[in-house]
Image 1 (tube, one colour):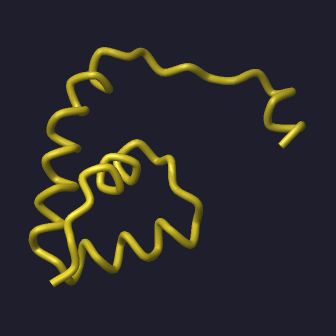
Image 2 (cartoon, rainbow, N blue to C red; image 1 turned 90 degrees about the vertical axis):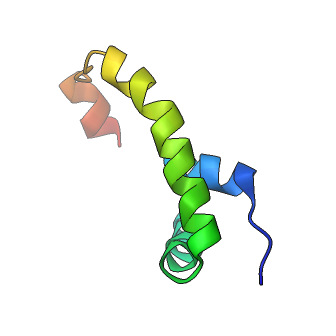
Length: 66
């Protein structure tokens, strides 16, 4: 059984992974209950921080630059 990486689970929840890594993590979430629990735990820990933040709408120039 693959090792559960708490750091990788946290990076996934934070949205800090490259597309290829994110796809690999999504497969692990589907196939590895222990890893899925680690991701759920990170989500649970970080959700209160998200709830306290107000949305920020970037200026139109930001989207144009992207």
